[in-house]
Length: 447
Image 1: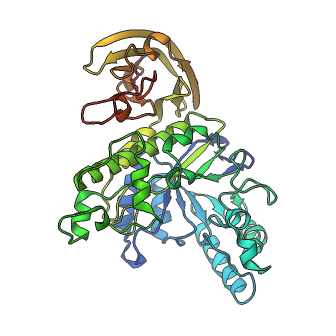
Image 2 (image 1 turned 180 degrees about the vertical axis):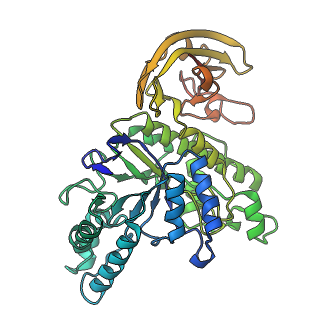
Image 3 (image 1 turned 135 degrees about the vertical axis):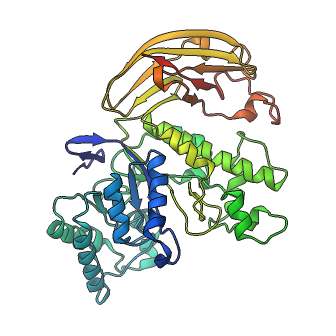
């Protein structure tokens, strides 16, 4: 196991791996309730969604032996944060000795597991000290830097020298660099969700995204089990995020209509979460090999709440899980920057005829082009969309649909702007008049 540090690329047996990951938090607020069977169910949900790595978040804990045994069995990689997150920690005694003893015990315990691919010093503490105004409030007191740059890497070098250590996430590769710089190392993207529309993901060219995500409510059955409210309202599920309900509504942007009933709210928020995560994952995968990993926040939950999870607190899959399964497919088509990106994450080449079709909302074909394509193993090929299929006669009524190769036929690539701007039935927009918006693309590459 190796780590190419500037680009932050994991290499397994000498081969670079694009990380299709999810963040893992404790699966219950009472760890003794998390059985091996429960973990096996959650791991199967991750694997079935195309996930190849679980990041054990630093705000959680060192997980049980069952956790790492199951990861070994399923071939899921594990990124292990040391349990420091979003806070300053004193480096003096007696706390320092406690940290060292705990770290030594767990590095020794976990080192034999082949699933473990990375030790990481902390979650967001380097960013907190650099960007969140900590120095003024600390008044020269210690905050954990000695742990992340000295104590923990020393313990890893002694007890598990074959595995890479990374001081924290986000981190740009050197203490003097801005921690959340997209140009090197890992970044966390939270302007989307907190302030910006999810289409802002298109402005990023990161090397590796270790956190990004978007909220959505749990399954209706989970809400009904957890709440005695009659009728249910958006506030029937706990909302952890500051101003979270307003962020959910603001996140609809011009993509979807404002909800008028609770059922509208529940459906639209789950749909918007799925679209936002899809947009981000497809954007970052299309940048391979410049970008070599995405770790979505988050797979699971420990409460029946409105959150960023793909699987809710009762273990039910939300629509975003199905979106993630599609976006993490080994082969994928996505429209990015006016081109069709063909993403091949398999060791075999992908060749054939790409069928591109523009059609009306009623399904009537209006234009068609056929393009011969070849995508090398584990690479991305960009294809310019011919004007005949890319430029609709009526932007509110035409749907350019690239079709996909051969036996993978049927996967679709979606343009970034959703149905409201097209004046679709049931939506309140009248069509933006802009060419190329919300074009559903289906590619059939015939080999």
